[in-house]
Length: 538
Image (cartoon, one colour):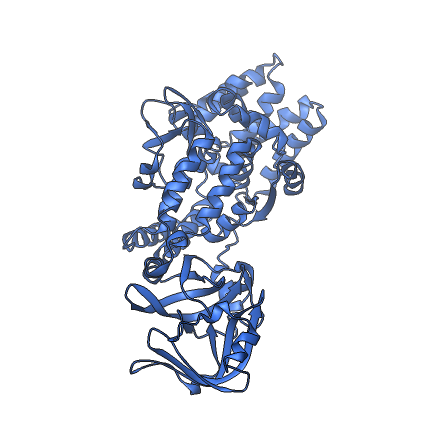
């Protein structure tokens, strides 16, 4: 952080340093979630602690609501200049400072709202799992070379298995080239604002050299894939944050949540993942959409497999969660043969037409689908019929049986057309409350402490105490240097901290200490450069 504050005072967007202090990020201590949350509230945001990577859908849902997830892991010493896994330095010192810029904060929320609607594929989810596993294994100091190799192979297989680029994958590229690795301002003198660069000592300096191509940002950035394990060969520059909105508008205009209809349903079917279709009655059906019956380019029947949720205005309707619809759901869509649109009727109007509770009823749709059964209940909301539940029900389309009485009660949702199709469930929290689904998301692994050597930890603790109390104990520090030299010859950070405390003292052992640290700074690795910069700052 000391190196970053010095470097980014010139290289980063002007709001960066201001944002550090205003969001509770300091040099001397690891950020505190409660303190950050209190400070972020002043900007209309909240923070929540999480464990490592969380599923993209959940991350974007948080972001759309102005909630910043903060990974509570702390990078190991071995990964000081770059960590393969999300950690509190990346999240707190990378993402939070820029939120003090109102245009950037609005962009984050707007992006979250659109990305939250993007349809992701089951292949995307497999890729997320593989990336998460590899990042955890690489960050874990007890991982073996064999474990890392196997995990890298899994990631390669997941990448090779991707058969098409989903909406969510395209949106993730926009996120990568803006929020994570974005540059802003003049193309000849850009400033850094991307969190991935703001939390990487090495890449943040490399990215501003001529080695990295600089491209004015446009919708074309979605054509550029990225590799999270490598430094980026090109970066995109936006004139200012407000100009990013037009890119989101351009891509969202073609997304299923705005297009709806057969095109939206086909995207959902292709994804083989949880999606939601929204009818013109505002009823939302969430689950894995497996097929549809179509007539004249209109969807007349939709079928979902597995756990299905029925919601209204993003809230699950009572008794219509996945416990009731564990094995799937299907329903006709459209008007009746006589032209009546049931979703435009209230219960009394439905009764006046002869469709009463406990009455045997036959509904023939304009599409040719026929629903026969006894009405058990009619669910109304906002004065209109939303769901009709039948017993002893048969649903047919021509000679095809779509539902039969032995399958149980039949819930028919009422709607004339599909207005929107989007990724994930409508009521995320209640959908994933099921134990079955919660287990699917419970991918957290216990990361081993990067250092379990009590004696070395004690040395660091003593140095920390001196720093906090601001009382330099020269004799103690000399003893610590001798112990480090004897027992921990490869250590550099404790030596560097001691030298920082003693650099004004003209003492032979302090001069020897500097020469020892300088020997660790030889070469062009990111770590060597970090040590060089540290000495210059001291």
